[in-house]
Image (cartoon, rainbow, N blue to C red; front, side, top):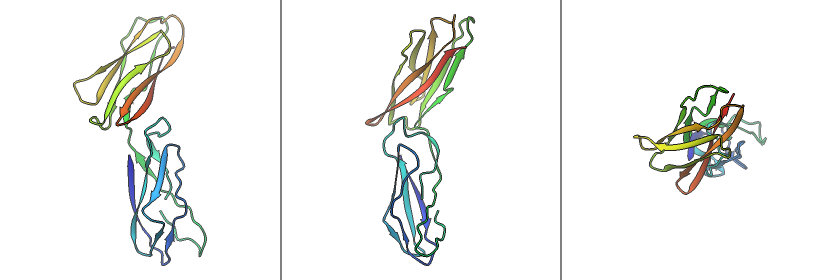
Length: 179
């Protein structure tokens, strides 16, 4: 995913970019060229270079809104934006009460781009929680149901959900447990 932000050099001097750097793992930053003449509007790019666990969704501060710098002094400016979730999981944590009557619980997994995403599996390392991934009637939306085999003692595990986004796998997690 790439976000483009237009900005205008409102100074009377050229604006020179030397090293656009994001402050978040999994993001990259670039500008369409290194020098911008006064009164010109240009575009800065920021985005995830690969969908991975490092490229978290939500509000990001990747970095380029130029203040007027003192003469010949470097300036850092900040670009703030929202990166939508590639895969949304609601709720992202499920808990059962210890010793309680079995209660069916599930979560919904929804791909932002249903044509380009395919949820391929849900895995758990512990035998007490058995996930079952089911497609729904809506393209790109899945239901993750759980069977809990033992509610006698507290436990907590992470369920790994693998989604194929084009050629890139994305791993998301759901926490399940017994309180």
